Amino acid sequence: MTKKTLRHLLILIILCCLSSALYGADDATVDASSSDPFCGGCHEKETTAIRTEGLAHKTELSCSNCHQGHKPKSFENIPACNLCHSGTAHYDQQQCLNCHRNPHQPMQIKLPKKAYAECLTCHDSQGVDLVQHQSYHSQLVCTDCHYEHGFMPECMSCHKSHATEMKEDNCQTCHAPHKPLEMVFATSEIPSGFCTPCHQQAGSLLAASTKKHKDLSCVECHEQHGMRPDCQSCHGEPHADAMHAKFPDCGDCHGIAHDLQ
Image (cartoon, rainbow, N blue to C red; front, side, top):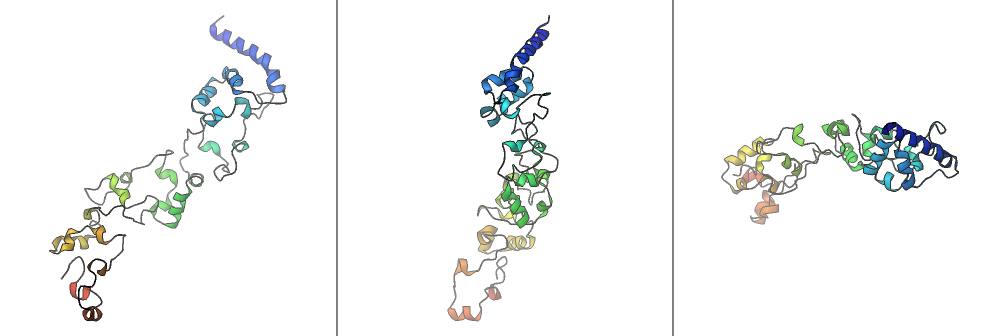
């Protein structure tokens, strides 16, 4: 008799001895320390998976807490996830196994090709940003960019840089991925060369200017994208009150800030 045959024979003997106690008792739960070695005789793959990556499925449950019976006596012995998981929008999803493919490794998540609503049950703030701040990104589903759970794509995998000196790390100093057109400058030290590829006229005028504005970075004056500061915010009112009253618009005499006269 081979070792494999002997092993199978021993398993059958154990099954015969324990089946009545395990499936005929009123209380179907069995302590993990006794049920896991028993179940692992036939279900080695599953018990190995839950021991290594089972998380709460390992620490809080035994096999028989979920599988309260065995085929053929208990034909429906695979429980629904919402038997334990309920009370949140995420747990209300109907197709849990679309992402959580293996209940014995619940956080080994494999996303379907197209996923959106199910993602937003956990990542709701990103969904709000996409809806409230419309851009091309709002037309995509989550897995168009995040094709693996937790994967953060590089902006430049889709978008070209504004300037040759721009690197991937520079993108989010201005652009938030889920509301990319609502630009917020994270620092006042953003090089003007990042701005001038889009604002070419302003860049050309400043490059040719001999005035002190040439030495300033764009964001020192334009603290928010599209914001035009009042001259008085830096210069105060350098002339007599009568002159300011007669010429309230500084540009009437001095031209535009990028090309001072």
